[in-house]
Image 1: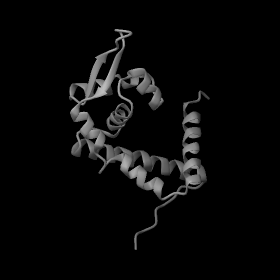
Image 2: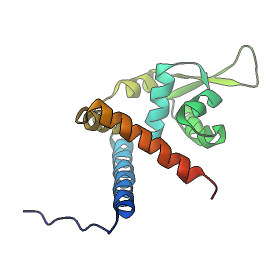
Image 3: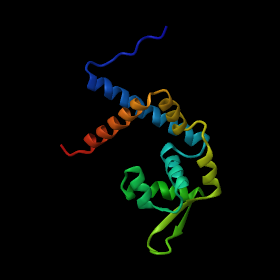
Image 4: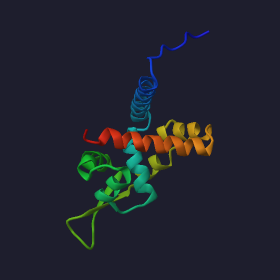
Length: 150
């Protein structure tokens, strides 16, 4: 019989303990993906987003992720250097680049096993739809509060 996990007192600290366990689990899975698939969880997320809607700009990808475009610069550059993304000059504004998947990027886009996404899909399937909505809403509220200047 496994020993029960020690819990801090109070729901706020217990909730934070769960969040930190989630962050750790995401990091571990992301590192495993880097070893087995050649991309991290965040890199695969960018690949999946570009795969869903090709020819997006860095700003559009960043907006989809809720990040500032400068945050994505390194990720996009690494994916391009590795031949997973192709950068094309925008026909209407030559200062702007648009990104599409290469054949190698499409292969990673199709991969499902061993990904953060697959684990998340399995977890969400174990919840009632109302619980998924409440969980997503709670995450949004927590992010808003963490980003707020006190």
